[in-house]
Image (cartoon, rainbow, N blue to C red; front, side, top):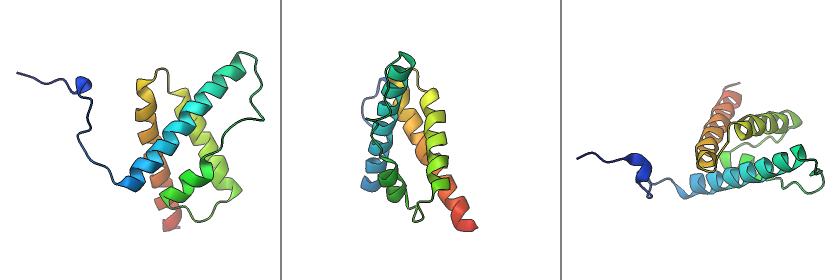
Length: 112
């Protein structure tokens, strides 16, 4: 008998609460960016009402220096991962990938 992993609704690994919180923020940021990007493509202006979770996300990952360069890196990374989402199931997958990319960037900056 084989088990299909796609049909499992529970997680196979328990993540620490701080990682869960960060992933939740990233997921919500991706969802709102995806929605507002699609509204923008449809001709609706979204510039005044865009939520910004970047400071909380970066702080929860451990970035201490919130420079303009870091925010530009984050926005570019968010846009790149947002462009990879084409259905609801990929949002969590891209949230995890974005989290991993941010942790890698944090380690690179600490090594400098």
